[in-house]
Image 1 (cartoon, helix red, strand yellow):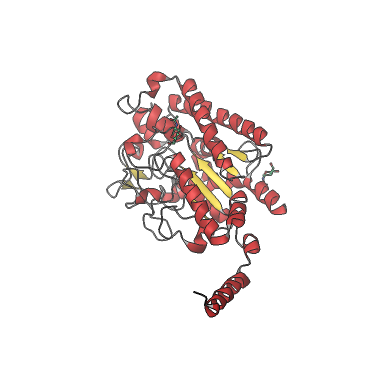
Image 2 (tube, helix red, strand yellow):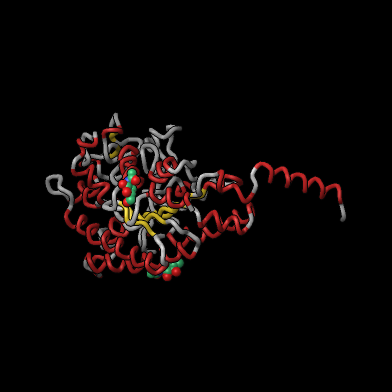
Length: 370
Ligand SMILES: *[C@@H]1O[C@H](CO)[C@@H](O)[C@H](O)[C@H]1NC(C)=O
Ligand SMILES: *[C@@H]1O[C@H](CO)[C@@H](O)[C@H](O)[C@H]1NC(C)=O
C-alpha cells in the first residue's frame, strides 16, 4: 500500500534522529566501546542468568557496590572491568545476558564473561551450565548483528575495531582443572606442570586469533594471578602461610609463555593488537608487602570461613571483615575493590614490567591521535 504521508513521517523521524546523533559522529561523542571476555575475575553478572553453582548473587557480595546489593560480580564492590570503564570515561558494560542491554546501551559494549570457565572446554565442568569461551564468541557475533541493525554494518564494524577488549583466562584451568582431585580431572596424571602450561598456550593461541578475526584490535590479555597466594590455596595446601610453591610455579611458567605467544601473534598480524597485562606481578606487589599498600593482611579473605577465611564460598553466614578497604582479598579467590583499583592503576600507567608493549594510557593517547 502506497502511503506518502506515512513515509514522510518516517523520513522526518529519521532526520530528527540523525540531527541528534549523526551516525558518522557517534564515536566522536561516545567513549570507545569496551568488550570483556573470560572468567569470574571479570564476570559482571552473566552467571546470574544461568543454572550454575558458580555465582555471586547472595549477600554480602556487592556490599560496597553503589546499590549495596549482590550483582553477580565476585567482589565487595566494583570489579576490574568496572574500574577500567571508569578510567576510559565510559559507563560500566552490562552483562550480555542482562535484559537491560538493548538500544543505545549496546553501543557502550558488553561483558560476555562467565565465572568458572577456562581456556579448555573441560575446565569448570563441575559448575555445569556456564558460558565457555567459544560460546562467548558466538554471543559476541550475535551482539555485532544487533549493533549492525541499530547503526548499520559499517559503523558496527568500526565500533568493534575501535573498541577496547579485555580477556582474562587461565586461572581456572589450573585451580578448577589441573589441581583438582582426580575424580574431577585427570590432567595432572596426563601432564607435568610445564607440559600442561604448553598445552594451555597452544589452545589459547587460536582463541586469541579468533578474537582478532571477530574484529577486536586492542586486546588486553591478563595472565593468571599468583595462584599459590590466594586464601583458598593457603587454606588447602600452605605450610606456615607461605604461598603454595607448586601453584606459584604453575603461574610463573604459564605467564611468560603467554607473553611470548602474544608477541608472536602481534608479529603475525603486524601490529600491537595484543597487550600483556602482568597480573601476577601486579598482585604480588601488594601480596608481598600488604602494609605498604594500606592492607592489614593479604592472606586472610574478608569474607569466608575456616583457615584464612579461605574454605568454601563467601555466603550470608560467613565471617565478614568490617573494613573491606584494608583487605587485599574479598573471598577465597577474588580481590577486593581496593586491590582491583591498584591493579587497574598499573594497567593504566604501569611500566613495561607490568604492561607490554605499552600501558592503557599510552594506548588511549595513540588511538585518539589516529
Ligand atoms: C572446544 O570447543 C570448541 C567449540 O565447541 C571447538 O571448536 C574446539 O575444537 C574445542 N577444543 C578442544 C580442544 O576440544
Ligand atoms: C605508560 O607507558 C609509557 C610507555 O611505556 C611510559 O612512558 C609511561 O611512563 C607509562 N606511564 C604513564 C603514566 O604514562
